Length: 116
Image 1 (cartoon, rainbow, N blue to C red):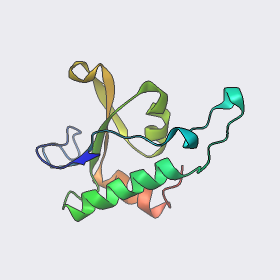
Image 2 (tube, rainbow, N blue to C red):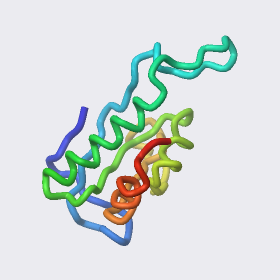
Image 3 (cartoon, rainbow, N blue to C red):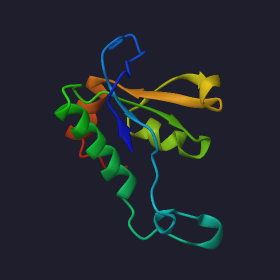
Image 4 (cartoon, rainbow, N blue to C red):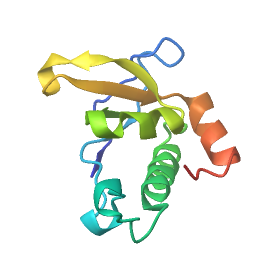
């Protein structure tokens, strides 16, 4: 679920510019990799594909690929691999880490093929 109204970048490179906010990033449980029970996940690149689509939506909205989201701690490494930058913990959002993807980061993700 994404939102496009009234979300602005906080990182210096894009500060104050509109971005696409991913309000509820989630993949289905059968796609989760669970090493403890030797479950590989049914569709391995679904998270990357959803992130790719969010970047494209951001571009379609005129936000040049800028994306922001709050992450569960278990997903923070995934977002770092996507090229997102940590902005900081947000007390207003259950003290979750807030990440942003800059325009340059979005371009790199798309050029590199976007599969994590």
